[in-house]
Amino acid sequence: MWTLDVYVPSLKRLTLDISIHEEELYHEPGFKYKIMVNAPNLEYLHFFDTVSAYISVGGLPSVVEAHVNVHKSFRGDWIWRRQAKYGNRTSELLRSISNVRRLSLTGYTLRCLSYGGPNLATYRNLVYLELGFDPSNGPLLLLNLLQSSPKLEVLVFPEGLTVPEEREYDVHRDIFFEYHWSPPEQVPECLLLSLKKIEIHKFCGDEKEELNLVKYFLRNGTVLEKMKIVCHFSLVGDNSFSFKDELENYPRGSTNCNFELCIPAPISSSNSNSLWI
Image (cartoon, rainbow, N blue to C red; front, top):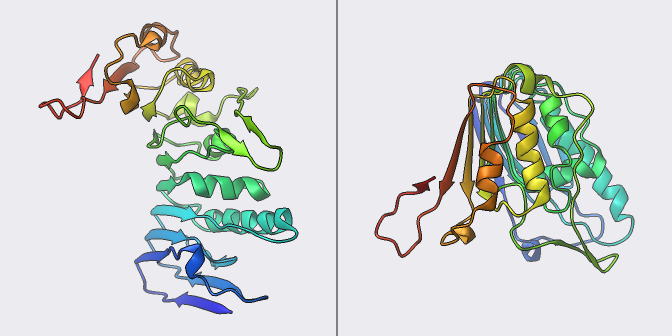
């Protein structure tokens, strides 16, 4: 077993980047990679791990900012069981930083959370949340995260809400599939009381689920001040933008919501700035 044990009570910042390529891993039956972290005064955490089957993190009550990117490929028998265990450990990692104020989760991390069920803590201090995109599950865990963040003020999607012109391929069923999302019966508290800004990048506008999510935010964000959408570069040169009027004129829960649509300038253009319409 390969073990990394971090025990430094006075540590304030920690960056763990264990991104070893699958081909470079040491393979032997029963051999495992293990990470253990115990740093009660840690304030900033950057955690990038692609190899460890076992992650153990003690309580990190002082963490105010965290970036988490964990994922692992599983092979052999009982894959679903090992995925579930890994998903539970990912949930434990996030529960250990429940006092965080700024949190960034990659799409890979969201996928790992889906393996074992989110089982999230309540992030009562979280004001800034950045979420990647998981093409296998779409926004499956989005509402769980919003419901767990009652004081959230800023929500950012740097990877967008869909995969442009692609679909996830299910090798087990030999079919292509799309994700589907249905609004919850109860609107998350942050949408009603605290969420002020939503920023979505790589927006395509031709996906039904994309538009449904944006409409949901506009309709239920009663204190929303700004909705910023940055279009995917593939839309450059397309003057139709059929979704523009639809979203600009869609009923909003907040009378103070400013809607901004940003189009990346063509690469060949001498003007490197984005275009706003």
